[in-house]
Every structure is written in C-alpha cells, then in structure tokens.
Image (cartoon, rainbow, N blue to C red):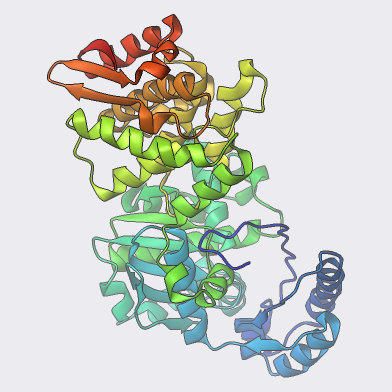
Length: 472
C-alpha cells in the first residue's frame, strides 16, 4: 500500500556499471549490460516470490545517452517482464526533488543527485520543486571524459556548472546530496569525526567542513583513507570524482550545509503516485504511528497519552513550536514499543530501534531526542549507555531538558495506566502555580501508590515544583 512513510520490505542494489564508457564510446558495454540483465531476471523472480502487485521500472542517463540504449531496454523488458520507462534528465531531476520532499520536513535549498552518468540539480522549497537540469558529469561519465585525470575532471565540472540558476538558489540554504558516491563520502566523514549515530539519511555537516574533507579525499589515495573498508570496492574509484564535484558545487553555490539524503528517484517515484491528501501527511508521525500499531500493548493508549502530555506541558509554560510539538507527539507514539523485551533491556533495545529506524521527516537531533526519551522512560533518569551518552551530543540543552521531562512524565503515566486506554483521560496532571497536581476520581485513587508518588516527586523536581495528589 502506498504510504507517506513507506516501509522497505526488501532492498537490494546491483552495481552493474552501465554508465561506464558511454561518455567516450557512446555505447553501453556488453559486460555491463549482461550484468544488469542477470540482476533484472533475479529481481523478477524475487518479485514473483513476494507476490508484488505493481512493478515500476525506469531507465536513466546511461540508457538515455547510449546509441544502443534502446536495444538494451528491449532486452531488459524481456528480462524483467515489464515495460521500462526511459525518463528524461528533467524528469529525473524532478523525481529526485520529490524524493527529498518525501524524506524531509520542509526542505529548502537545492537537490543534487549524482549517478553514474549524470548529475541532476533542482531547487526545492517546502513541497514544491523548481526547474531541474541534468549534466553529463556523473561519476563514471566524469572518469571517462577526463581519462582518469582529476585536473581535467575539475575543468570539465567547472565548465558544466557555469551560469546555472540552481546554484544561485543554493546560497545560504541546504544542499541535499543524493547518490551512492556522496553517501560513501559521508560514511567516511562519520567515521573520521567519531559521529555517534550511524545513520546516513539526514546527516548534516556545515558546508565549510564538507569542502575541507572533500579536498582531502581528492588528494588521498583511497586505500589510505581511514575506514575505507566501510565503502564498497566498486564505489571507491569514484570517491575522488564525487568529492571534486561536491567541492566545486559548494564553492559555486555557497550553501549553509550539506545534508545527505537516502531518498532519491525511487522514493520520488513513489511520492509522485500518492494522492494529494496522503502527500500532506506528516511522514514522521505516520512512521511513529506504524510502530505504535505494530509494537504497543494497546495502540489506543498513545492517543490518550498525547492529550495528557500536551496538557501537562502547556500548564508548565512550555510554548512549543510546530517542530517540537511533532517530536513530542512522536515520542508519545513510540513510548511503549519496547514492552515485549526483558525489563532489563527495554530501554537499551528501544534506544537502538528508534535511533536507527527508517524514519523520514526527522533530523538527527530529533531522532536522538526520540531515542533518548523512550530510553529513559524505561531505564530511568540515571541510567546510561555509551550510545545514549553519544546521542546527547546531538541535542541542545533545551531539547535535552524536554526529553528528560517527557521521559519522567511517561514513567508516571505508565504506572497509572499500565499502557491501557481510558485511564489517563480521567486522571489529570498539571502545573498549578508552584505545584504539580495529580487529580484523580475516588474510584481510581488507589492508583496513587508509593511507586507513583516516587515518580511524581522526580518529575516535580525537574519542573521546579512541589507534588500534590487531589482525589475526588
């Protein structure tokens, strides 16, 4: 089913190298075509085994530019048993933009999709895509055109980037980098910097730092780069060309930051098929709702918790903007996903699941906030792990404080309700003057056990108030 937050049931890539040699010979290489056709037959068999209802197959720059591209597509259609859509460079750029729009909350800047045969550039502004351009400087094409000379490759890229309006649209905004070569560069950067979260999508680095790292990669022998084993051997020869192109884009476009996107043409193709109403759904909240539905004891409890927490936070004087409110709601939806684990490991397992979940529409700080909030909801405020300590580095002091308060409030809520619906709407927790007041009807006053009172006191200390229970 098409969704604003699609889940990957099975994901695989075959590096066939179709773009290799096209820039110089004008043709797809026989061995590359054979490898691609073998992969398509395999994918067809897997799709049949999985009972896939609808298959969409597209061909991009290599097949578009090669003299024998149409012959290859005809063979590929027989191999996969489906018609293949040969898309234009502008269409490819547009789908890349939709991929970024689907994967981020309100993206503003320019999308750059670096493939083997081409580089697409297109501006994005919220849910709108601008006019795209396709340039013949994909990694394989650039390697061929430059005959392996980085100096000549630099001149080629400079000439191709001259007078592009997309570069002007990048200034002071974000550059969303799409494509395996740029993700590989980001992997190396994460390892070098000791980054605490091994997730590519949403990895954001100031443009100046990226440019410095790109120049290092340009000059270095790839075999000498730290953690090069994290990059596939097929991708390594392209690193220097991807780094060079990224460096020149930053120099010309002057973006604020480089943001890695794992969403590209494929995700854009899915987003393009969504009904308009589904496109407007918040992808983070849809993803969190899916986890709530699959893993919580009773998914209905989350709706009660969202309202209960909102009243508490509002009474405490936290006036949240939309971005923080959606994080708060997502935390409520994810707050019970670890209940099936052994009690000693619920926090740690939830931390790991949320930190690495295939969420879209959330940056790394937001991801860390959600993971830490649910970790401490299970493990308590004083618990710690190496991963939790690392994730705290991604949060501002205000966001860390909010995470601690939510976790502490969740610990009260779950003792009161056991994760079941219809309890919290009858039990209110609000700040009144300098007191944190828990109100409950007479038939529920027995819920205010010593353990509940202990947790209520912990929450009251975080809020700078005195706890009080009022029955009746």
